[in-house]
Length: 87
Image (cartoon, rainbow, N blue to C red; front, side):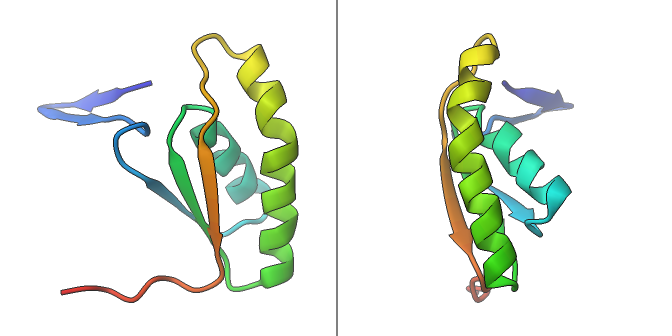
């Protein structure tokens, strides 16, 4: 899956993507991005919610990949804290 806008191309397989918040919507967005073969970084300050989302993505990813043409299993990285900004 690659999205094009003007001269820019986005492909989740070439760069990691980030999802902020691991509630119902965030966990499903992370699942769809992970089924595109890339690395997804899921951030949430609530460790319990982050764990629920991580288990959800791990459980559903094989089924989504099997059911979507062209889907590839990606990788989910879950983090409680945002990484510090590097200058």
